[in-house]
Image 1 (spheres, rainbow, N blue to C red):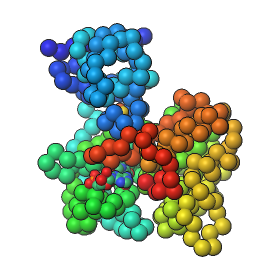
Image 2 (image 1 turned 60 degrees about the horizontal axis):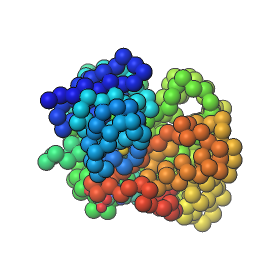
Image 3 (image 1 turned 30 degrees about the vertical axis):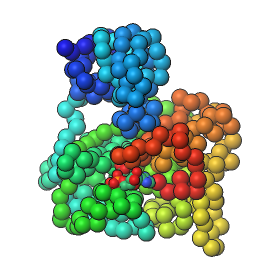
Image 4 (image 1 turned 180 degrees about the horizontal axis):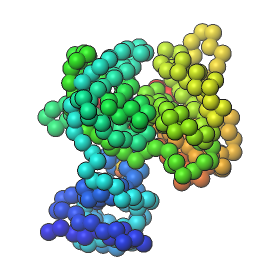
Length: 347
Ligand SMILES: Cc1cc2nc3c(=O)[nH]c(=O)nc-3n(C[C@H](O)[C@H](O)[C@H](O)COP(=O)(O)OP(=O)(O)OC[C@H]3O[C@@H](n4cnc5c(N)ncnc54)[C@H](O)[C@@H]3O)c2cc1C
Ligand code: FES
């Protein structure tokens, strides 16, 4: 039997099929709730349960009123009322599955592949800067990768993929793929991205290939000719990991609203730039973040540490911290279990 979900203080409501999560049901019926990992790890989908009962995977049964309920894991057991941190009505058929041909595959750093994909002629798939796609690997397996290109160029997309030792997609499948091969991708997913209604200065924090969605955000602002102050801190282990340095240097020269600070955790000899953990460099330059928004992307440990230190030491409003954690699709490690190390500059 389907249950009814009401969204508190709105006239929005939708049905949930037996066994379906609140997030899946909302999306199916055109309501966008915040989420990133969909696996109960990142907390992005946390919301209130005003009334009713849900079963939450890994946590058991929860009855309203309750706060901090993970809506990507919650399966209603009665009619419920929820209060998500935000909700937006969207077109439910916007997401599509398309064949994507590899136009170019480049090794841009020792462990990073830049993949340029092209959709069939005449096919455009709209997305927002910061969103990601899902590559189908077969046997029900998928992997998530963020679009790194400007949303305007939606007849294809660019991905930055860190090659992980033993990784089923990033090493094994990707190693065997070449120009002309076709991947099946579903897109767009995710609610990470800058809030364009705000003009407050923003800190963009990227670790390794966490730069991909951030690059899309920056390129979108270039295309839109807006001038919101953006300061990018991009962390990598060494100079080789800063695989888009030329473009960023050019953008920083051309646009006074854009500042770029690269940070190396294992600096090469002769490096005269910033060193250490990327979020600490940002905090050292911006000790008072009370008037900023922060958009962070990369390893979960980097994101956790940045959020904690920015809010406690930098006076950042927790609501102004937005993150996209690159969680592994299988064997997810709870972000809170990890501690930041120099590795976290290189998701
Ligand atoms: C929303 C989202 C967006 C993402 N966007 C990107 C992106 O733009 N670029 C990108 O490179 N990755 C991105 N990822 C991560 C990506 O989806 C895969 O998890 C990653 O590429 C590993 O897949 P794999 O099949 O190669 O490895 P798997 O076969 O899944 O894993 C192999 C082994 O490596 C471990 N592992 C998996 N991921 C990592 C990691 N990041 N660091 C260290 N060990 C790991 C696994 O636990 C496992 O033991 C994103 C993840 C999410 C959730
Ligand atoms: S989207 Fe629910 S915990 Fe990440």
